[in-house]
Amino acid sequence: MASTAVSSHLHALQSKHAGLEARLRQEMARPVPDTAMIQSLKKQKLRLKEEISGH
Image (tube, rainbow, N blue to C red; front, side):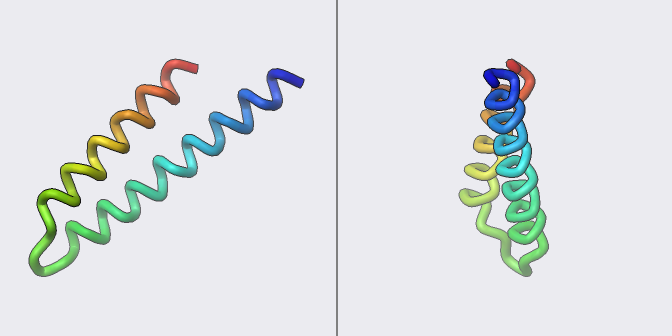
């Protein structure tokens, strides 16, 4: 049961990471990207990646 919970949590983290990646690509494709938004998204992605690799 605990393994299922960890697997589910890991999947949720990976989904969030993919969502952030999509938002990042979308922001960077804008004619005038918001650099603060890009920086924030990259930091969030890094935190998620670190949490994913810790499992």
